Amino acid sequence: MIPNRNFRYRATLRALAAVVGLAVALAEAAFAAELVVYSSRKEELIRPAIQAAEKALGVKVILYTAGAGELARRIELEKANPRGDVFIGTTAGFAELMREKGLLDTFTSPLLNEIPAEFRAPDNTWVPITARVRVLVYNTNLVKPQEAPKSYFDLVAPRWKGKASVASMGERTTVGWLAAILAVRGEDFTRKYVADLKANGLKVLKNNTEVRKAVAGGEYAIGITNHYYYLLQLQDDAKSPVGIVYPDQGPADMGTPVFSITAALIKGAKNAEAARSLLEFLLKPEGNRLLVEGEFEIPLLPGLHLPGAEKGIKGLGQFRRPALSQVQIAELEPKVERLFGSAMTP
Image (tube, rainbow, N blue to C red; front, top):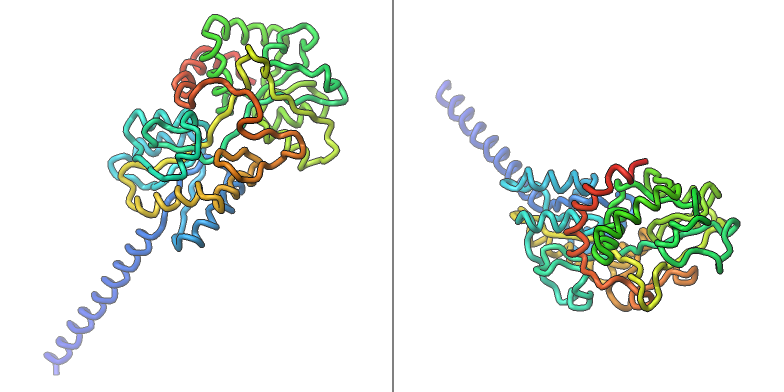
């Protein structure tokens, strides 16, 4: 009887091992089907597009959100064994830095041919999915529309002393805005401009949300911010006394900078094929529309609805922008942080 019991025991162990092995295999397969996205976009804004992608592609997306700089460092630390598959950032600065370090993989799609080359990496290791514009907002109770500043550089005039605000360089578009000025007007001019702004009482606030609320509340007459904060303010309160200006639109002016929101494939990603499908989906109208409308950004692909057009928001081709690529702006961002980090602190 004992041998029979041993036989049954060994058979039970083999059966159990088979079950465990099957469970492990299934778990590994399930893990392989999970697409890990590192995103510096706010989760509530990008989640609708991610959920639509999950349904369309039949893939489970694990969304990890943090600051763009933190994510870039994480991707570099994990380069020998990447845990993420896709990076979604804000402006091109950190994406370009990762491209230079060889941390990103090339992505190709016919849809990219419809986006101006200035908004993407030259080798398509990061690609643009939407864009934001750096504008001026003003309080219409304090400033008449015809008297609103027409240029960023008007804000050094005595009439705007102590009346203008901007977000700190914790906001990447503040860094990109100064990088665009540095690229167009040079270092000497930009140094003097920032010094003159500070001497004229420019108030540096923590972020763009503080800027739009301070302008709407009448604390400051003018704010330098992104176009969609104007729309977010009107969404909060449709009667907010705010107006918008696309600055520097004259024939000899630099234009209003545009910054592309970037996405990229992480080199060595375990789910590279699914990652490529996700980027393709985010560029297609059904996915891109959700990104554009999620934060009132402007579409880079033709034919999509422009949120806020009835409130004065302009699409590409409707305003003058600097003759700069996103790479040119990104390359100057570290220099901007060195030159003006202390001046642009709350």
